[in-house]
Image (cartoon, rainbow, N blue to C red; front, side):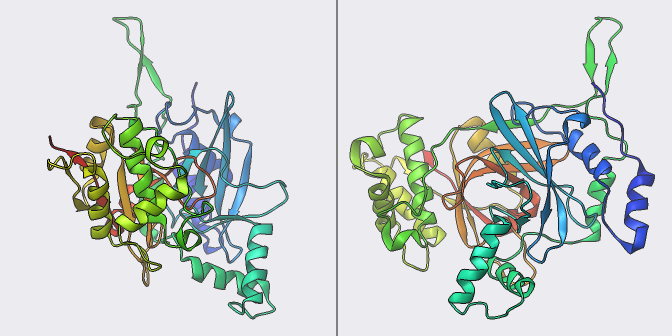
Length: 380
């Protein structure tokens, strides 16, 4: 199957009309159809199949893009594409639904990372914050902006992002040519470099977790990490089934070992607590090392942990200030997947505080300067 190439004129025309950087939906469909994801990760689609989509808005009611809903048998996926030349063409993709909306008429608001809200959910948050005197304006638009400020923003509007749109001008992912010697089809598209591991996702707000789950993202990520090493890799580690009678008990144990407080968990304390937990069944041997490593420029290390060793990586996002933009803010998630291809380097995570247990993907280069990696090395 073939997909039409993106016309350079169509992009330039959209950006120059009324001094707007908005991109036409036909151009965006070309981008999505030519996005170089792995077919193991998302189903391959033709442009004619990209008719199931929703408009996406920021919390100030500005349209920022579209979410495309993809069906592959009994599985569901999504790709979020921007509609602004100053944003990266692909904002996020992953398994399951992008937004849990019961009505196709509802607006969908996206502020980056896992911050996805339907219109009714956002209005409910505005109401709650108004009752709590966190927002006091009678103007819902003003209150939504205050909600946006509370959550922070992932989107970094920068005209330099236009070069990422330019890469699609002459790209046709599905183009192929005939190999006359062998008679076989030789693709011009280089497949993605992709790997994933299958870790259980725990929810930090599970009933019974200390402080109602507030600031428990670190211990919950640590529990997911340890459980994977126990059940999927077979190491002698205290795990859910044999040593804890509930997920909340498991998380609370990690909470104590990591010296977590209502203010959260420091990366050094996360590493020390996870090390203590992993060493518990190896009392007379230094069996594990749990280093913390800056994620900046270290995508190869992240790939090696998941792709070669089949180990997860805990990712800590520092507090965002001023004009910093990252998928998460002062938060831990568990890295379980990556996709590295001609469109860039993406990492997939399980979020202990998200509304869904599915894996979500974000661009490494948009986030790595704000991340710390915590990995585990078995050295016996």
